Length: 291
Ligand SMILES: Cc1cc2nc3c(=O)[nH]c(=O)nc-3n(C[C@H](O)[C@H](O)[C@H](O)COP(=O)(O)OP(=O)(O)OC[C@H]3O[C@@H](n4cnc5c(N)ncnc54)[C@H](O)[C@@H]3O)c2cc1C
Image (cartoon, rainbow, N blue to C red):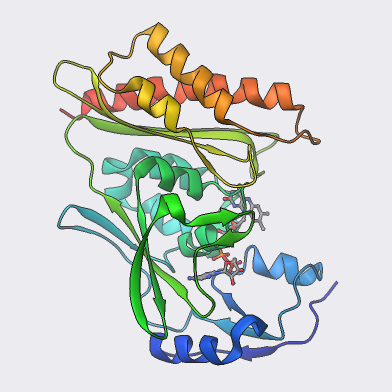
């Protein structure tokens, strides 16, 4: 199918875009990489009368680390994240994640801002950002505000962005020494959405015990899930088999999957347990290398 007719807008500045979005209200959809929006429009699951293409707005694509924060512009493509030396060397959880999103063709266009703003529980970045304790920066007609990622996903395909607001930047705290992360995803075939996936980020103390832990789950609930009890269970403990097994059980208990063609509820819950164990072991191994 081809999409229903719509009016196309290409603002050249953020101010123009926010003014336009404020005027058009619910009638408008923002277009970034188009890798989620265009398929929905072609299937006529979404038929916005107005499409606001933000690709012509300068200054929305960058990856820079300064003042203890990795700042990523919303229009940064997955392929740019994947190829970024700073992401590869210092943010292995993020690097793992962008490598398993869709396929190279999609990753050349899809943006990190679109991935988060779309708020599909099957998208991979949301759990990663929850585990990393990120913030998003939103820009609307009355200015800019920062939102913790933990309060960003309000429902399936719903976020805390107000009507007329754009997501403009993602901010990730720079890792302390002895920090590492990993993303483990099971997919039916390369390029597919996750049957389930787990993001884990750890900071270890000098004695090897866990200082801080972030654990979040993809596609096992109506929103990405922060496995808070699993995180808490690790704090102050050495990562031995029993501690990892306990955290993995708690992460599994936090998941709320639905049965579908990818598997039963029981299968997916057990998958979360197994993937959490693997992600924690890999995160600890990487943290140990970054003394
Ligand atoms: C074949 C295929 C496989 C895929 N596999 C995966 C996968 O494995 N994992 C995964 O995570 N995703 C996957 N996706 C989905 C897609 O890659 C992501 O959702 C994508 O990253 C969305 O980014 P985009 O820039 O293309 O957003 P768009 O499609 O342009 O927009 C998506 C939504 O977000 C809104 N939006 C976009 N940018 C902003 C912004 N800056 N501020 C506010 N709202 C905004 C749009 O209005 C729209 O509602 C797949 C897609 C395809 C086509």
